[in-house]
Length: 135
Image 1 (cartoon, one colour):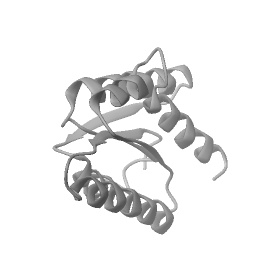
Image 2: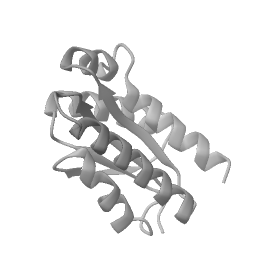
Image 3: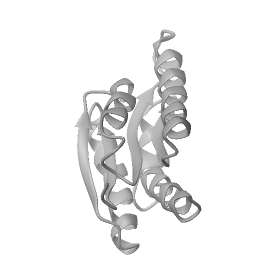
């Protein structure tokens, strides 16, 4: 196993994801961590890609955005994605920074992803690195 962090990012909302990646990668670089990025078609597929790569990386960062719509789909994707990421983290004792936004609308997602505001990508990277220190 190498010391790299794997960022798994949903490219469903490209602008949001690009912002989250910018925050995460900047934080990793500032803390001298190497990383690789792979993309998933949506947030639901992120746990599969982390699980598939679990033995190849020291830690993981999940990035993406789920925006509430008119149906129950938002809750299903949000709940299952969070649950599976937690299961993988606990089952393999590997940190996974959770940077998947769950927003009511696109404007909220822009604010929460903005590298100059509440960038949750940076927060997810920070959480992953803090957990690595405690392992």
